[in-house]
Length: 367
Image (cartoon, rainbow, N blue to C red; front, side, top):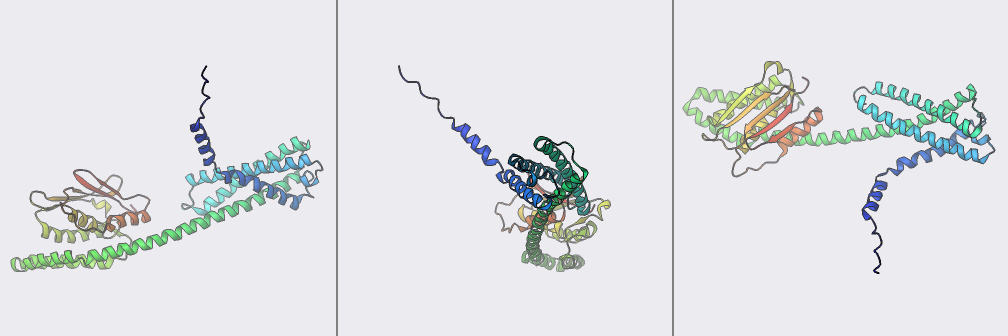
């Protein structure tokens, strides 16, 4: 008879088991053991003579080993519990919101939890290993005081490492913001002295001088307002919507004189939002972006809609009709707007595109 083939090895099961063990944080599991042994040695050195049930005063080696086991168990419970408390407080009471309150609440919760764990583990140790259920108040106070002190030292070191990491992250974030701010100012500088914008504005002005001197004078006044606004606000982080809308009126006049009747604006910004804040030049960059990448003609006029949503976002929408030949774009405009708003607010800038329209949502700040 032919020999039956042996059961094949289930490599998928082996792979799943290997993956399971690979995901285990061995440092998190091993650290309580090492820390527990260290704390037990320190506790014996500090108050071994004062505490009659200390492993240092117990002749039975089994009790000595048992004491190490119970201290390791206590350390594990304390570390896991403190991590859980910290994670819970991170969700309910972030450090950024109120650091003093967070520090006080966390210390009170940590100490209460540590005292509870020490009391439970100590009573279990005396019951199982020493055979004594009664513990004097003096012993309880000594054990609790030393245990809390040592544990809080460990917690303090952990908190110090955490705060140091937060400080390093904040420094790194500040450096990144400075770099992006320089890029943004460079982009603004290019926009304000953009040869194409200036050339087209002067070209429009030259045609108006002979055709309509009054309109030409008005054009010069609006052009001066645009450049004055850029120079006065280029170093500011935020301005009010009222200021930005005044700038928009001048900038809109210039581009409408150039592209009319191929460019239309639909502006619906309620007066109730005039004190809301926005980053300077935001509207100019978004409008310039729409004009730069879309066709403007009598058959295909470009319409730009500006309004405020119910959740207090400034919404800028234009109908999408991309040019057949794309102009050069550095890509810094929208990127810098998105990154700078990420620094200023938790609400992100949203950019979306469909077949019919291009849409940008900019959060209004301090509203």
